[in-house]
Amino acid sequence: MPNTHTVEIDGLSFRCRLDGGAPDAPWLVFSNSLGTDLTVWDDQVAALAGRFRILRYDQRGHGGTGVPDRPCSFARLGDDVAALLDRFGIARCSFVGLSMGVPTGLDLAARHPGRVERLVLCDGQAATAPGGAEQWAERIRQVRADGMAAFAEATVARWFAPDFVASGRADKVRAMVAATPADGLVACATALQGFDYAAVLPAIRVPVLLVVGARDGALPATMAAMREKIPGARLVEIADAGHIPNVEQPEAFNRALAGFLAQ
Image (cartoon, rainbow, N blue to C red):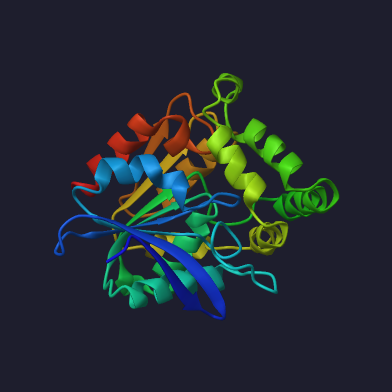
């Protein structure tokens, strides 16, 4: 079976990639952040493909997936994952979501709980922060006014330490963001303007790992508060990392992820 697949869902073509091990290996599903594509997980796939069957996909409007003609909701993004699990015959999986992938995963866990075996939530939150709607509206205006290349420069500066950017190691992520269709980014940014899964957290009954870059603004405190609401959840802070710790500090991120999945 070829690694790269195209799957039709809700009138859109989704780009997916399958990697990994034996037919009886457990499934691991990765969900990308706003402005990135499935290759943001390359370091994790390299580390874990020997032990898992891995599904990566581009969220709608991103990478090789089609651009929706209307704003997204996280109910729609969660249903996208469920449809992909059906398409590839995945009864249950460990789900790893980054940033926008966090509410995507929370929706999946809330409305399709039987499909989730473990949940890994990275650098995201359960609800739009106070003032978040206005912040996202401003970023949407920036995209419309200045284009994706300028938005990519500003995004990389927010996400990574200056020395990481200067080293050239952020170039791959900059290129991903710049290549994201503006309409695709705006469709998903609209979902980020108003979501709330706070009530879902106490009801989660599967093992949960929260991972956050220690330099990711207010998110370490936000995710610490989330940990207190999720029964049995663990929180790992990745030192010397911002919003995309799996890229900025892949070895530390992979140790945390592999240790959790081995339990």
